[in-house]
Image 1 (tube, rainbow, N blue to C red):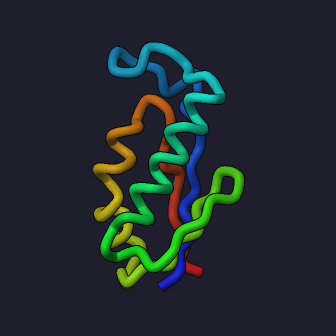
Image 2: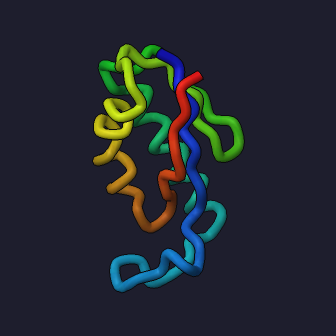
Length: 90
């Protein structure tokens, strides 16, 4: 199944005790690249490509809920840089 993952950089409204500072653009890009690599290395991933703030994923998973659950720990690791903004089936 093909999916479109929408992501965004942490914004002022996201700041908290866990994430007290806005990330630099370079830190955001590094985190985004790491997320992409992690997705590519998952057994369920056939392919993944980054275009701007969108990650296109071809996965053996059948639903967006399964994909979201599978990637939860990946996005949690980069919580202070990148936020998951949604997923769409293509």
